Amino acid sequence: MKQRGFRYCSACHSKLQKWSKTAAGTQRWRCPKCAKTQTRKRTDLSRALLLERFVRWLLGKQAQSELQIPERTWRAQTAWCWDVIPRPMLSGEIYPIILMDGIRVGSMVNLIARTPETVINWHWVGWESSNTWSELLNKLPSPTIVVCDGQKGVLLAIARCWPKARIQRCLFHVWQNVRVKLTLHPQTIAGQELLQLTRDLWPVKTKAQAGQWEQRLRVWHEHYGGFIRERTYLIHPEPGQRKWWYTHRGVRSAYKQLEKLLKDDQLFTYLDTTLTTEPIPRTTNHVEGGINSQLRTKLKLHRGMSEDHQRRLVEWYLYSRTKDQKPTRNCL
Image (tube, rainbow, N blue to C red):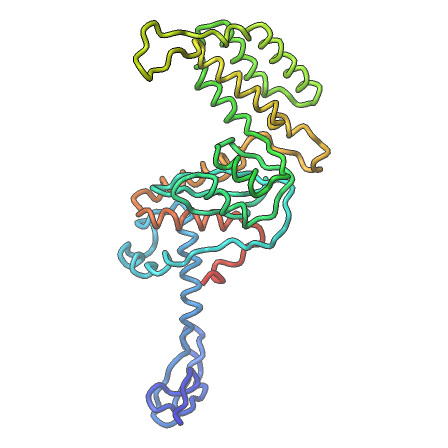
């Protein structure tokens, strides 16, 4: 029977003998029958090394023209690397704090779950909804606290998948929502005072300060409750047309948002030291600034990539931020 393998001649299949080394220090093998010499080629090792170099380039700042290799050669050699998809290692560990947010890349949205230190998992979807968020949440055990931006889909998914988890709404997104409704230059005194009250959320660092802030909001409502209930009526409405609406809809909507956050106990969760010994974030900046802004910078550096290649860049970057990730070559 013919013998095959690197220890046997590729021509006559006789067993090879060691025959000194090449100038590069690689072991040379010689066939005693046909005198043909050869070296062992580790295609698995060369692919692994090329993949590592590819990922370093993908997550780095170098353009293809700056590599010490012709651009077309580089693209041809690394074409298969785009098909390697890194997967997060899910250990089943229960994390006390999880931050949730997403980033749009082309026509897809990448939903991200991370702790204040590392990325846990991610999931590609067409759009954010309670069902798509649930697909991500169902893969993870329920944490004690979830920090999120308050998107309706993620709130419904948390209530469905992690009903016992406490929610901390991102104060920056709260400020943004109120600012959109009131603008930075409200035309009414009630709007100006409510905007300033929202700004004063940032200095709140203790439960006593939080109590004072809640009291200020109640005083504001006692003073302007009638103002935000004022209605404007249509004199001659058409059949089926709405007959009235709230006159100060922006101010009313901003107040109702703050009131609901207090009622649901999602505004000052970060002050409850009984939930965990770790400091609780009050914004999603760990995702927005620590992940999303970095991804946008890298996508800009490699602008011109197809959408599939952009998604692969996002996946490799998130994989590099996971805890105890395997070496790049082990993803083959």
